[in-house]
Length: 140
Image 1 (cartoon, rainbow, N blue to C red):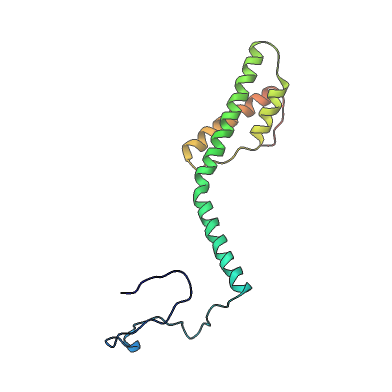
Image 2 (image 1 turned 60 degrees about the vertical axis):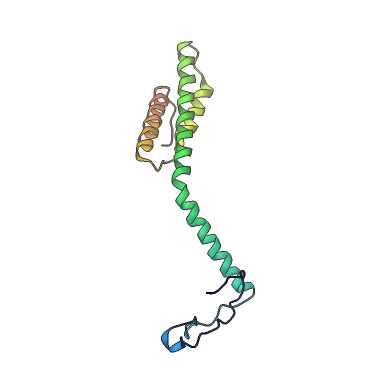
């Protein structure tokens, strides 16, 4: 049995007399490919592979990140709608709340979860209806 001492170049493995290269034992680099180059080119290739792996991991986690962003945006829109409702009940329209609501409704993140996506879309629609009632145009 072999022992791993650390990371580094591979040392040639000791071959037992029972196994010969003809029977498939050992490791060999395919003859059509040259061994990996050392130096800046190898470092750049390794960095590129690491970056690709990090991007794949980030993409896998992006669903939960998108859900959090969409949930946060919907909560902010609901808070602005509540402020606007209180202002209208007090008969003093709040222009700042309307403009903040317009900013929030203009760029709504898309959630990964279908149920959350529908709920956020409903809140955004309600915000746009309220903005239309007050004649504030949004780009959405």
